[in-house]
Image 1 (spheres, rainbow, N blue to C red):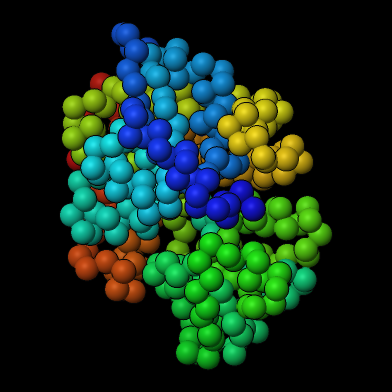
Image 2: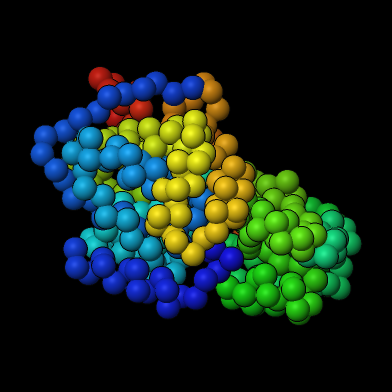
Length: 339
C-alpha cells in the first residue's frame, strides 16, 4: 500500500533535506527561490497536483525551485518545518492544531485535501456499521486523535466504547485486516487503501469518519511558519498559484497526472495510480464558488472545539488564528490580511 510502505524507504528520501470557482492569478517573481517542501507521507495520489505542477514547470514559471521531500513519519513534517529545515509542509489539520496547542508558531495557508479521508474500513465484506461493532477488535495506528474518532463514532451509534477492543497495529492496518487479527481498522484512507483493496478484490467496506459522527475537517493542509507568512508571503502565494495550475492540469488530463506521480514513485503501478488519482482529484478542488485551497474558518472552529471537548487540546482555539486564506488565488490582493 502506497502510504504503508517501509519507513526505511522514507528515511532514504528524507535524507536529501539535510543537504539542502477560483480566480486565476498569474503570479510571477524575480529570480529563483529555493523552497523545501515536506510531504505528509510517501508520494501518492494526494500529491498529484504537486507532482504535476513540478513536471509541467509551473513552480519554475513563478521563480520557485521546489525540492519535494518525503518525511520519516507522518508526525515529522511540522517538526522539520518548525526547526527551519523546511519552508512549507503538508500535514493534517488535527496535527497542526495540536502543535499550535503546544506553542508551535505555525499557520495553515491552504487546504490540500478538503474533506476527511480517514476511514473505518474492513475487508471480506465484514461490517463497518458502528452499531455492529460491539465486542469487535478494531485496529488503529495508535494516534490519539484517531482513537478519539473511534470513540466518537461508537458513541454516536450508541455503542459502549469500552466494549470494543482497540489494537494498536501501527502502520500495519491492511495486513491486520487481511490476517483476521482485527475485524476492522480506523486510519486508512478511502481514496488510497480503500481503492487499492477494491482493485485487489478484497471486498472492502468503507465508512469515512465524517459520515460516522466525526465533524468535517481538512484532511491535508499546507503549513508555513508564522515568520514565513509575515516575511515571505509572496513565495507562498506563488507556490499556491503554481499548485492550482498543476492540480487543474491533472484534472483536465489525468494521464499526465498519473505519469508525473509515477515518475516520483516508480513502484506505483499504472493501474493503482490511475484509480487513486481519479478518486482523489475531486477532493483536491474546492466548491466552484471558492478559491483553490479554501479553508472554512467556521468548520475549523467546530472541529477544534470537538478536539478540545475530547481532551486533545489543552486550550480553546480561535480558528482565525490557526489559518489564513490570504495567499489563495484571488484572495488578499489589495485587501487587509488575515491575522
